[in-house]
Image (cartoon, rainbow, N blue to C red):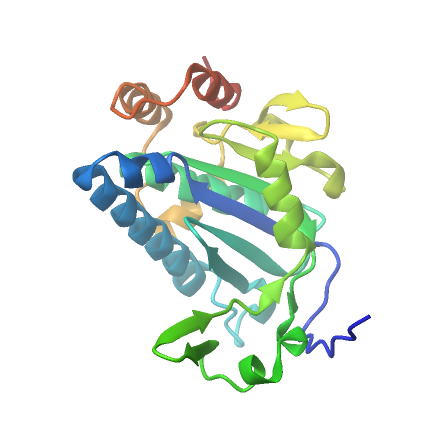
Length: 251
């Protein structure tokens, strides 16, 4: 058995993780040239929104609250956002996911966000020596390149697996992973899955995050109208996806 010399910067077993990606990204990318450009623009806008929340809202200011900092890593058409430490109350991660989901729909994109808990570790100690010594996680392959993302953990895998169990333009949370969950924000339940009513205007923390980050927030009627318009634009999402989305809405 190979032994990995893990270089773990900070292992916390119950940090929250938000897995968020752009729904229908591959369909947009493959449909035609115009939708491919739209898909890439959506990734740009989601990344920009994540950066703004990190830099303007939760930067980990040493003079204020260093421990509120967040970490984000891109995987394909989505991101995993992870807290610095365990937070029994999921209000902050729900608000961040809500802020991002509302902003993206206002830009014409549907997202799926799933929240669970776990750890995130630096796994570069398991890499071959050639990759360990590479600069910026990039190594030459003759005239080609190999790049790596040297982080992995259950915060990613559990949130990603949760996302795989649901369909639609949703924000979901594994309610068993937190000691208290704001029930007034939950529209529906399916076992351990809570569907967050992210279009509701009741989440004041989400609105505060959007305002500080400079992201559009909109209102419930506006978001509902945009969703109705979204589902009739080619390539249209399947009926199952539409029905899944409605579990988060006041329909």
